[in-house]
Length: 191
Image: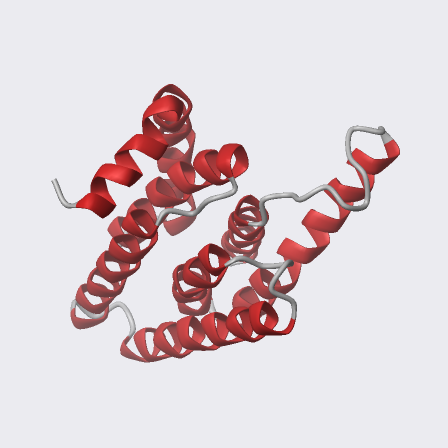
């Protein structure tokens, strides 16, 4: 096994049970939020990767490249199949632009304040941008803003409950994934 995959397997192994249990609701949500259609496999792959990333990042403050990179590539391929199958060619272009834009914004935030966002968050951003931009620009914009809102509310709650201080580091990946899930859920309910 290549060293990167071995390291990722070692990172996930202690959390295998939590990752496995998180896959069930993530997959059910993905099937519901995507509805029947060609995009469903892409959303399911992203949700499964997101479930694993959520657990690992929340526990280790790491978003393994061996999950984010392949998941992003597979989701691009599945969205391309969906576009070719007649779902919406313009949506594929929008998704690719959204992935690049969100990735670029997160990279800029990382460069401005390296202690704030890690490179794992930067590498997760294109995956979030792909699916949310596919759903529409308003969904993409919500997925840009919501992680900071949700993260801020959780941080304030932890500080108020004296379970954290202002200097406590919180994994941001789960907030990115929660923001994307909330944005996609709102788009599904609205549409």
